[in-house]
Amino acid sequence: MRVLLTGSAGFVGSHLATRLLGEGHHVVGVDNYLSGQPRNTAQLLEWPGFRFVEADVSRALPDPGGPLDWVLHFASPASPPHYQEHPIETLMVGAQGTQNALDLALAHGAQFLLASTSEVYGDPLVHPQPETYWGHVNPNGVRSCYDEAKRYAEAITMAYHRHHGLRTRIIRIFNTYGPRMRADDGRVVTNFVHQALRGEPLTVYGAGDQTRSFQYVDDLVEGVRRLMGVPYSGPVNLGNPDEYTVLDFARLIRDAVAPGLEIVHLPPAQDDPQQRRPDIALARSLLGWAPRVPLREGLERMIAEVRAEVGLPATAFSP
Ligand code: NAD
Ligand code: UDP
Image (cartoon, rainbow, N blue to C red):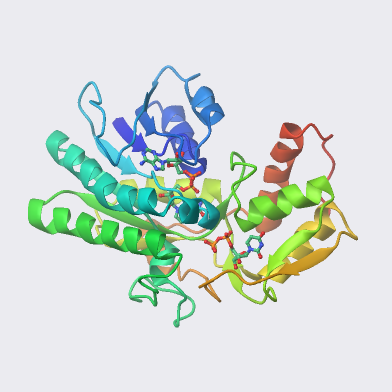
């Protein structure tokens, strides 16, 4: 297959590209480094099947230089500090960037996959969240640049599917972590891991009784690959239903990396969703998929990589 992947220099995009290249496919990666990392591109360029184009997909997508079987649209800041620092770019990449990617797929007779998010459920009143839940989103709050951009992205993807007959997929990704996240990513897993390794207090926003469910990136990539093989155009949740309060998650990382470390409470984040856990019944039945990597094992893999990056010796992870 020949695949064009937007957001290839990002965390998820770089893992997905590695998987596709490992299977022998050709990947054209596109990224403008708004929140990605050149070193992710450098790793991918070691594969002969990889080509990289630095471009802002909200302006135009590059000529892929040949036929395309798939356009995978993963470009978008995903970390709340990143998208709140770049609200206009975030809205644009979800809106114009998605339309540009859909038009490219249409022009090439390619299939299209959108990376959407559990954030379309907002601060959910239904728990856990099935795909049939329409969500509870503040349309003009500090998170709206991300949530509404992704809701629009889903809407325009379905419009291209219904109006143009484009073969499309939509995945709703729940909190995903693993190696290759930026040290300054700002999301909870990277913050806690780097804080613990530096011996700094872990920063819990608010009381820490809000919940999240953490998925290891390899499980997500497996779900994406399976959905690419199934002609289902509706949204599909991909996440790990194993749910933790943020305070318990802080304790888990502290006890594993640096027991005795202080946990401090900072003011709560604005419009922070209070609970989040995927209902994955659809992915189970449609794809025969379920996450396989337990949290402790995934954290162990990620922490080993971060230790190597920051020059710390490897030690056993012992929660
Ligand atoms: P990331 O920030 O690491 O990667 C996003 C990539 O998109 C970056 O490399 C960034 O430079 C690139 N990008 C942003 N705007 C662009 C533009 N206009 N043109 C070209 N490139 C652009 O984030 P991630 O965690 O890898 O997320 C990847 C995708 O998955 C995003 O669409 C995100 O919304 C979605 N997602 C991720 C998670 C998660 O937990 N990681 C959860 C839900 C949804
Ligand atoms: N959070 C926290 N401390 C941090 C970073 C995040 O307590 O240093 C909390 C945040 O308020 C939210 C949860 O952890 O309740 C997950 O935040 P993240 O930014 O990872 O992603 P979100 O799921 O909110 O998009």
